[in-house]
Image (cartoon, rainbow, N blue to C red; front, top):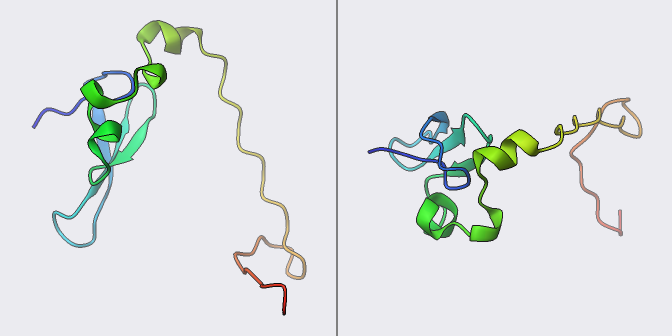
Length: 92
């Protein structure tokens, strides 16, 4: 199967993750615009012809795009000095 990026129509797509259950899903990434999608997502997210026109990119769009900002460092958690994933409800 030939795969193209739904967002920019690049034909260089890399598999970056695969389901631990064989054949269930893959996560793909476009090598040009870095769009990522899971193969189980709806066609409007995985097929170029159904991807919303207002979000499609051309090579010119990518060439003229400003630099993507870096992700800032995580803030330290309250007690450990490390970020935590703990979610507490209002009662605790």
